[in-house]
Amino acid sequence: MTDKGILIVVSGFSGAGKGTLMRKLLETYDNYALSVSMTTRKPREGERHGVEYFFASKEEFEKKIAEDKLIEYACYCDNYYGTPREYVEEQLEAGKDVILEIEIQGALKIKERFPDSLLLFVTPPNAKELERRLVGRGTETPEVIAKRLSRASEESEGIEAYDYIVVNDDLEECVKQLHSIVINAHYAPNRCAEFINQIREELKEFSKGAN
Image 1 (tube, rainbow, N blue to C red):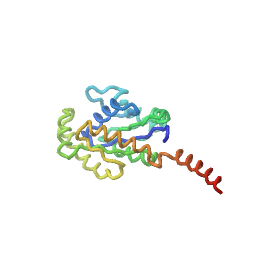
Image 2: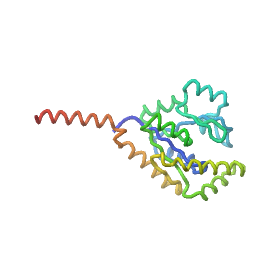
Image 3: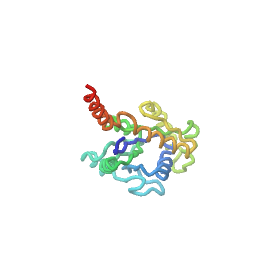
Image 4: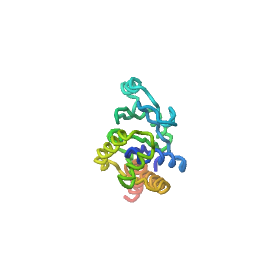
């Protein structure tokens, strides 16, 4: 219908498996581009600058804000997170469906600025499984885990703002479901304005001939 990609915003509770889901999606299908977010938090073990995140100081991040070089940004658990503008715009014009993996605050800002964006919320099947995954990561203290679970409770109040819920239980099935949602979203009338206008003009020509 259109050659332009869709801006896809993926959010979810910390520990819901968003990162694993996104990696599997990109391995399985070639029409996606994953936007790399910028953050002021410290890298976790194995994370690389420019791959998982662009790691920046608070001063560097605030300079990007002042220069309007971020599509969105938010503060989460005492750290900034944001989306660099240039890469996203280039990929959309090239026809890629661009995935932004961001927190709920940033997602709602994206929807305000880009009404045609597609918002997906990833969740485990239940709260107990969320706790199990957070503990299983082995990267955070019990205090931080408790803070993340408390934050998840707050975030659950905003789920209705999203277009779809994606339950991350079986990874393979979840990837298929997510891809299917995106493919179908390309055919939503609000993303097919050029096609709709074209067929209207063609039909008008038929109408002229009939009169």
